[in-house]
Length: 320
Image 1: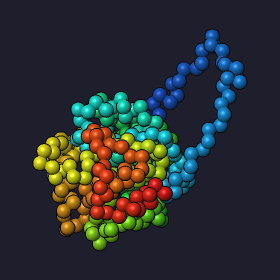
Image 2: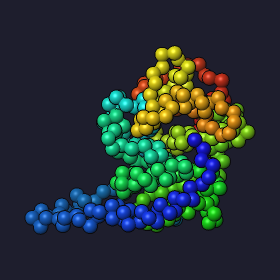
Image 3: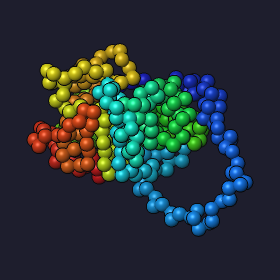
Image 4: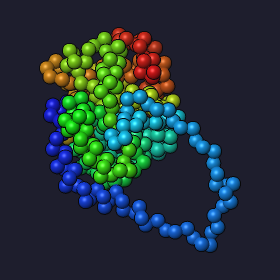
């Protein structure tokens, strides 16, 4: 849901967590055993490797400290949703075999590895989820030295002139944990995401009181960095209108609250306040999957050949 107030209180949490962050994050970093004197190093010619070609820069994703663009490319990506649809699917090993694994917000792996896997290459996080990520710091931060984090949020929270509270807290976090790979979405890129939503749906996000979901950002980012996207846990657009649809938790790690379809429908049809348009976004994803290399698992489905009543002719814009 939309958080109307930026997470200014997160700074207090960050300060109080400094000691535990540094101890946990750096534990083991100085404990590596020296190489055995009985095992000679291989000849230099066997250690030399041809230099890897640098991944292309992705426009609009900037490091919070150095402001350098994100460079990332994957042949195959597993985009793991946070849906209760994942439970009981035993997809964890298949997910972990992907070159890159993408997760969202504070969705955990610990305790759910059999269904959601354990690896994490990229995590896309909403500004409103920063505090929850900090609370789960041992798994999501301290054990994620190789994970790239991309945070998104409105300009009021992410501005870089000292008044963006979330951005300030992310800088502080990255200063405390300099090995973390923390990026934010630039203001111009956020506008691009809004424009993409308008082109694909015919709806102006602001006038329609729509608030883009983390899933929208994650899918679009994946299209920029992945040759193939395997999506786990995303239902088709018409799923909740089927009388036989099953009821599952909105999040696999949160069993209380509205179930998935109740959450989707309440947001989709609300006209007061700002809400996610989950079903509308899934129609866009289905249209993209007709021409782009996107595949859906758990549940497994394919978009039908009929183009839904949306601006699907603009689907290639998502990958450009």
